[in-house]
Image 1 (cartoon, rainbow, N blue to C red):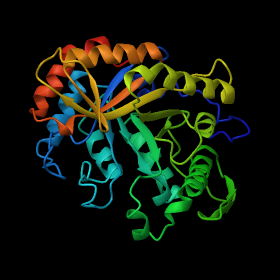
Image 2: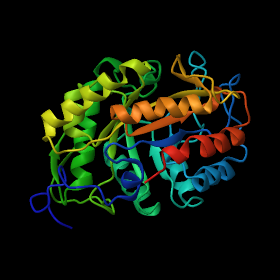
Image 3: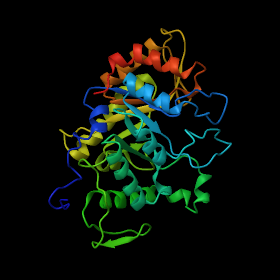
Image 4: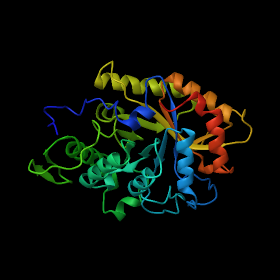
Length: 330
């Protein structure tokens, strides 16, 4: 393997990584789904029945990605446990049952994870999925979880940067040297294996993770944020694009994504309205919104229809027939 001096992976192209190429391209938008692939508006937990069949259906219908949240404990004040299963283990499981769809985290709560072990896990998943792994990282939004790990909530932003630097170093350098106040040190006598099967596994910020937008634009491979109201999308995308150009040069492309809950109603022409944490819309209303988002410069949307009251399989079929033809995976 090349050393960092021979091959600067901080600027190495990742265009050949299958998940990245499936999801992200300039002036184009793709559609992904946030797990679980079932609706449960009145329950904090899904049943997870038929979850493999539903993942295979999403793959066959052409959705861009399956995104898995990182919720280690159930907190009744939030009333939501994500897809129940740990995202690292779950991605490994679903990789064996799917063929093309990208598999991402949205996102791993990095201040709570040991970055050396995470680096080995993510590289292993990228190999086992044949390059379909996307690492979404966040700082978490549940203060009550941090005491469980004996970690200070107020310094999670500093801890995020520290963990990310260690993760990047051991993932991308051969026999790396590093010293961290929280996550150990290496004198260059040990190497982490495996390394990513392509230039690197894409690392995307999910939310700002207590970082400035400039830091994210400089250090990460993309950004997925909460969608603003539709009329603010152009300014939202322009701000991201300006930061990427300022930090990385005018020719550098780093994708921008949005995410949120989706209440997909039966009337396909019902216009999209912004709701708490997401959208309510008919399928054609959603399609029109996504065309505007694509024109503004958004490259991916991750939708979580768990709040809908319609059967999830019906929702996927309608999205596949009315929305995906306008926004196909690459």
